[in-house]
Amino acid sequence: MAAKISPSILSADFARLADEVALISDTADWVHVDVMDNHFVPNLTLGLPIVEALLKHSALPLDCHLMIEDPDRWAPAYAEVGAGSVTIHAEAAKAPIRTLRTIRAAGARAGLGINPATPVEPYEDLLGEIDMLLLMTVEPGFGGQRFLDVVLPKVRRARKLIKDRDLPVWLQVDGGVSAETIERCAEAGADVFVAGNAVYGADDPAEAVRALRGQAER
Ligand code: DX5
Ligand code: ZN
Image (tube, rainbow, N blue to C red):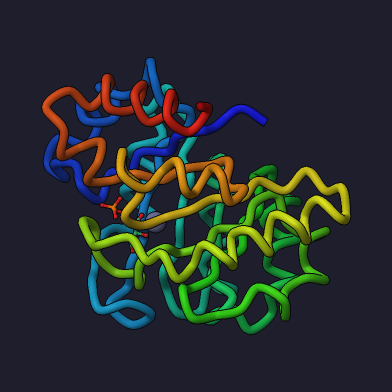
């Protein structure tokens, strides 16, 4: 599958979100939106009202990454307002199968997120319930952190689990993805790349997306 680039607006200017998204709308595939509640992670960002507002201004589908407690309660609403993809965390969901099915039934792609120290194997049987597996390559909570190489063997194992079942599940890496690390992620089997700092920290975000894609598909 061709690489997909999902720039994270966590590193964008929150006061100018529509303009920041417009900057990358010709070169990116998705817009990654990090929802944080100051409970699941020690940071607070944005929630449903801002996602709803941004949907009206984004030419690209929104890839909503919920780093929140009680995603079972909140995730369906993101799908209902029109998010293209909604990812819940395995560590936080109490009824992941029900929630993933509800997300899909509302017309969004369903994602399952896994923190760096959480193994993928316990979730093997859920692969048929999801459209995307998100592997965190930093501890969740902040942009601009250093990529954790220790997660790469898990990316490889996850790709094998997906391949062995012949499932159309996208494999996303999130955290510290940059010109220095994206090739290793692609080589390990990732096909969707979130990049915050590497895109919005660049002088030309659109060009940064183009360059990342070129490296991922090399
Ligand atoms: C971190 C978020 C990431 C973050 C990535 O908890 O889930 O999406 O924005 O930012 P960079 O690419 O700067 O590590
Ligand atoms: Zn994220």
